Length: 337
Ligand SMILES: Nc1ncnc2c1ncn2[C@@H]1O[C@H](COP(=O)(O)OP(=O)(O)OP(=O)(O)O)[C@@H](O)[C@H]1O
Ligand SMILES: [Mg+2]
Image (tube, rainbow, N blue to C red; front, side):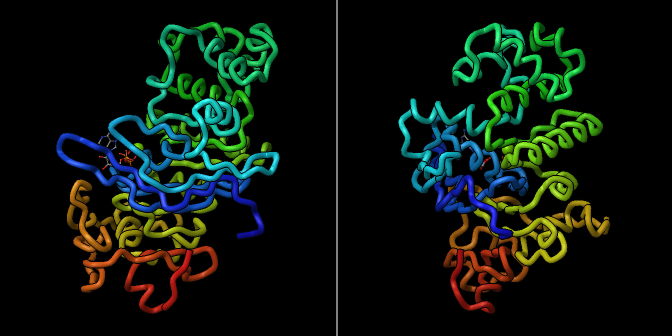
């Protein structure tokens, strides 16, 4: 891939939720790399594991969830390779919010109603000692609000979350995320609560920051228009697995996994503009008792016996384009990344 260096490397990640109804096998061996200065997208239907995967990266999985195994490596600015899953809470806190920022799906829930926006932006800078005192923190908070194109930032820095519109709340949340100039931003549906104009502005902002700061963005969305507009590479998830991963254009132009093909037929394709939509037959499986073998096999029109028994490995079908499907690996032959 164009010689870019990895910043976040996820290897063989498994996450379960221990519920009264049983163990939900939510993430089932997910692996991917996010590279320096790229936007990497996780896409897929609701419940496929996008949020859980992204939260597991910085260990934000709460009880009854548990990361069962796997590695999440972070390549720090000073050239260290750190397994985030093995750090002490203290060491992790030093990285989270400073080098890796997480923007939550729901901006209202991410803001504390009791503190002003300026305080909340300042707090992360104070915590990570990127400012010397509160005076500097408030000054920088105004600057951060300018960066996220908040109207009238000098006034807004002193306001409370309930005084802000949805778009302004989201800008504040992104501002908190950006306050320490992180290397990686993980954004979970950062614009799902916003109307399309604000969404476009926020996305333009993220693109600009990514370019200026060579930031890595891990973007979670089910909006294919956003994927086409924002992403360099895409991972398509289904029921806790990555079924296809590759350069954004190739995923749209040459989707190979039967699920990706079905998914792209079910949403307007922003590149080909074909709008004859078909829904995907069948339902998303129950992850307490997931289907054996390939989790997509009960809905796959091409499934063979092997698909019902063995989990397909990911194989590289063209440079940087990986598919986990027995129909494909049968043809390509080898095992791959
Ligand atoms: N607290 C929890 N308890 C039990 N199961 C959970 C919990 N949180 C997530 N899950 C399960 O983990 C799986 C993945 O959920 P996740 O939230 O990652 O989906 P998603 O792809 O982000 O969906 P959406 O597009 O709706 O945000 C789902 O099957 C979900 O039911
Ligand atoms: Mg989600």
